[in-house]
Image (cartoon, rainbow, N blue to C red; front, side, top):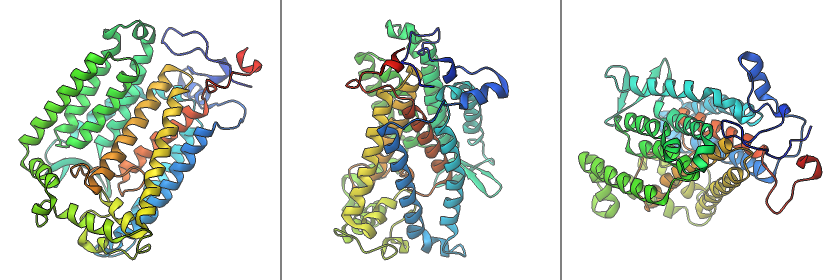
Length: 418
C-alpha cells in the first residue's frame, strides 16, 4: 500500500502517518515487529541508492586498504592477516545490522533512545575507573571484554543524536513556535553530560564529535543565530583551554604550524604521511607496494590510512575516496531535507553531520590542513567499534531516505495525496 503524504502533526510533533506505516508501534514484541514493517516493496529514491552503494564501496575499499596498511604490523603479532581478519569480523557484524536497520521504520528506534543513553552513560563512566578502563597513549578510552575491545565514546555518537532528536520531536509544536525551553531541554544536558564524560578520557576530538552530533539537531530545529554564535564562542574557548592544559596537545598544535621543525619528534607522523602521499604520484605505487606501512607511517592502518591510500592508489585514488564521502554527505543531506517526519529529519541531519565532520577531521589532518586528531576515517580505518557504529548510522540513514517525501519539484501523485 502506498504511503500517504505527511499529515497534521501529532501530539509528539511528528507528522501523522498511515496506520500501515506503524510510525508509533505498540509495546512488546508485536510493537517491534510492526516497527519493522515497511509496506509493499517499492523503488528506492535515488539518494537512498547512493547512500547504500557509496557506503558499500567505501567499506570494500576500507577492508582492502586495512590489510594493505596493516600486514607488516600484523606480522609482528604472528600473522600478516591478523588485523585485517579482526576488521572483517566487525564488518560481518555491522553489515547485517545496517541491512536490518535499512528495512526498519525509523520510528521504531525512538523507544531505544533512553535505554541507549543510559547504557552509554554507564559505559562512558565505567571506562574512566582505573583498573577497568584500558589506558593507552595517555588516555583511558577502551573496555576489554575478553578478546574484544570496546570504545564507549563511539556509542555516544549514536546515543546523543538519537535522544536529542527524540526529545525535540516530542516538543515539536512548541519548538516551531520559538519556545527555547522546549528546544534546549533535555537535549542540552544530554550533550553536556556525554561530552564531559568523553573529554574526561581525555579525548578532545571525540568529545567534539559527540557535541557536534547533538548541536546539529538543535541547529536544524531552529536554534537562534545569537545562541549559535555564543555556542561556537564557548566551544572555541573550551577547546583552547583543554589544549593549553595538556602539553601533548600543545605539541601537536606546534607541530602542525611548523611540521619540518618537529620532523624528528611529535611531527614525525605528519612528515611521513606527507612523504607517502607525495610518493604516490597520480596513479600510485600499486596495492601492497607502498613503503609507509613498513613502520614508517605510525598508525598506518588507523588514523593515517588515507596516507597509504594516496601512496598506493595515487592522487586519483585519494580523490575517489574524497568524492565518495562527498556523495555520502550530499545523499544524507537530501535524506534529511525530504524526511517524512521531524524526528527523521533531525536524526538524519545529525548522523550526516558527524560522519562528514569525522571524515574531514581525519583527511584534513593527514594532508596537513588540520592538526593530527587521531580519529578514524569512517568505513575505511581499522577500528571495530567505530566500524560497527558507522554501519549502524548508515543503516538508519538509508531507512530514513527510503521513506522520503517527493522532491519539491515533483508534486505527489493523486494516490499519495489521498
